[in-house]
Length: 136
Image 1 (cartoon, rainbow, N blue to C red):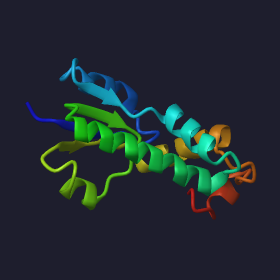
Image 2: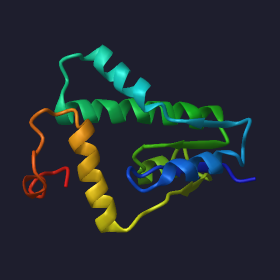
Image 3: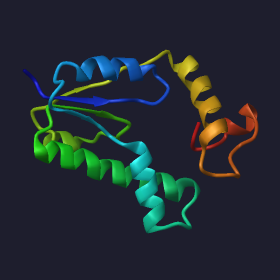
Image 4: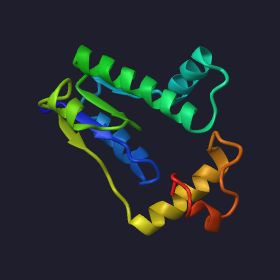
């Protein structure tokens, strides 16, 4: 059975898909703990906000991912960044999968999510202002 790396793209309806996918390897599966990643990033640098916090958070997620790959966990899922270096290195031979959504519906959902959860208090307050940001 193939080892699976499920890259969960935010706001694409992938939570249920990821849960079902992990059933393929019920005794050798793991998810990336995004709450732990954020807590570790803030414990190391409590002053971080905005883009700096997001970058530190993703470095912690990448560390978790690499730890699972090194242990040979058969199915890994999570909000992680995928790169050629990862696929040609530690994840070589893994089946990388994702689930995508209609781009417009995903964009609107992403905007609404960031309005509720973005770590930067100076985030764009309106959809019109959001269109001119890097987050868009």
